Every structure is written in C-alpha cells, then in structure tokens.
Length: 117
Image (cartoon, rainbow, N blue to C red; front, side):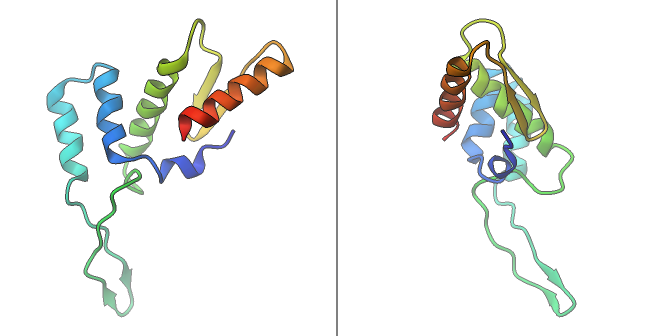
C-alpha cells in the first residue's frame, strides 16, 4: 500500500494523540503542537508572496521532522489493532502487510483501510 496521500491528510490532533500514545514527554508534544498552531504557508512567485493561508491538516511539507511524525502516527495506529506479532512493515509512506493466506491478507488490508479512514 502506498500511503503517500495520507501524509497530507493527517489531522493535527492525531499527531499529538499518537505522540501521547507512544509515551512522548509532554514538553515535546507541546513543542511540536506549537509548531503547527497558527502556521501559515506562503506561496512565493516572481510577482511576490501571497498573504499566507491556514492549513489544518497534514504534515509540514519539507520539514525534516514530518517523516518522523508520520511514522509515529502510523505506529500508534498499528498498535491500536495489532493483536500479536507485527504483521506490517512501515517505511516512509509505504506499508507492507504480511499474511499466511490470501483471505487473511484481504482481512488485514480491509482493517487498515477502515481504521486508516
């Protein structure tokens, strides 16, 4: 599964939820939250910059911290429905789901789709 579109659609509240779920210290959760609060991207062109606009979902594009935050979110989601051994591999915005049978694979992929929504 390619989770590329998910990177831009993670609600900001989910970022702090995931950090709390994985035991990140509160001061660090607050620091990350403050980076997203009130941030306004600006579009620069040869004619000048726009006034900026508010974005309420997704990770900051181009930030070195964003890939780590995305992995934190995905790990927290995985832990929500993992029942035994990890049957998924996450790397950047890709997900590999492992199963012993085709039926089990379809079931796991459906779980991911439902819970990922």
